Image (cartoon, rainbow, N blue to C red; front, side):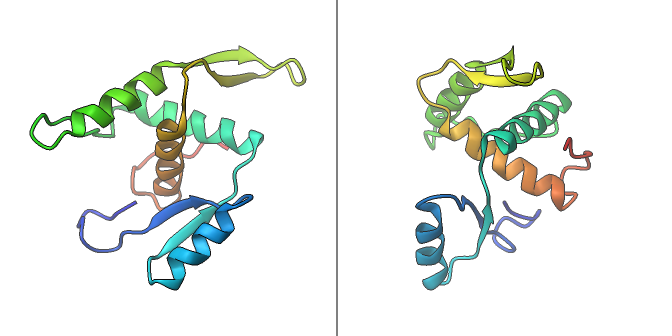
Amino acid sequence: VCSSDLHENCYLIADSSNAGKIFINDLESIGIPVTDQAFSKQKRDTLLQNLSTVLKSKKIFIPRNEEDNSHKYSDILKEQLAGFVRVKSDKTGRDIFKSCASHDDLAISLSMAISEAIKHDSLDLPPIY
C-alpha cells in the first residue's frame, strides 16, 4: 500500500497467522515496514466484500502493460477474481465467497491491500464490516 507518491509511505501488508509472524519479523529486521493483518475465515469474507465493493466502484486501476509484462499478472489476477462465486453458508445461511479457481492468493493479497487503504481513507469508500 502506498500513498499518492509511489516512492514514499509504502509498506507491506502480511498475513500474521501461522508462519506469517516469522516472515514479518524477518522483513522488519531488515528495515522493511510491515503492517500485519490477521487472516481467518470470517476476515476473509470481509476482505472479499470490501474488494467487491471497490471493484464495482471502479476506483482502482490494475496495470496492464505489454512492455513490462504486467499484463501476465493482471491476467492471473483476473482469472482468480472471476473464480469467486457467492454461495450460502451451510452454517450461517449468509452469503460467503467461494473460490473455484485453482489459486486465489493474488486476489486475497489485493483484498488485504484494499482493506488497509479503506482504513486509511485512501479510497474514499466506507468499509463493510
